[in-house]
Image (tube, rainbow, N blue to C red; front, top):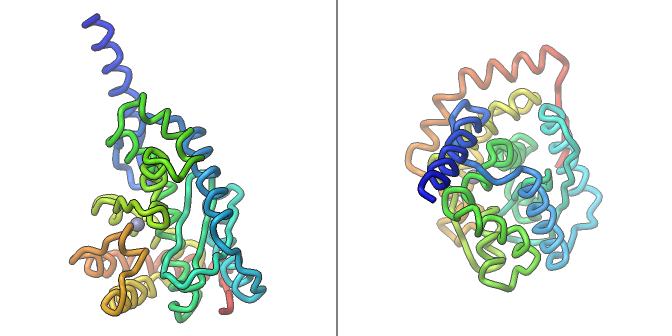
Length: 260
Ligand SMILES: [Zn+2]
């Protein structure tokens, strides 16, 4: 019995040691990615049923143009929808699903600011943060049952599943990403949008705008993506490298031109 337990632990540890994020950090993420993808798809279906999808050609083209430019650097097929919702929010789910609220489109001044948010969200997906959250907070057994629960967002387990995916706010449960996950998504996101030819320095303006908006009313995005005191400083420290990446992208002919 004891030997089996030790063997099981060794397997988990060795699997965990294999997993590394795009920044090179090793992580504990033992859920199969295919299962996380199904959770993401299911969560996206639930959100689609509850929200109104924007039919505005202008809004859809603006968002699609940004997502296409960013995901070209990542590969894979990504679905994006614009939701009629005044709250400031956007999200990306495992399985390559992206949602952007019209409130956030109204807030941003330009393509680079919205690219900053979408890049950050894609950063969470690429670094498998949902998988890591489930692996850290749940046992493997509960982890598996979460997959089924996501189809029933009205149940407590379903709400937990959705909050671990980062889309719990609309179901009443908020589970903020950790500071480590936030910083990592910032690093990945900024580099990604620079590679696509967007201006990464607009990410700083964007976070400032978010902070300003949160003084008037709670910002949904900040409830799941809390800002910390050194976020702006960290981003500023990243800028010299990021601007260089953007210049290389421009030299390679990447000039995204997404009009709001
Ligand atoms: Zn985040």
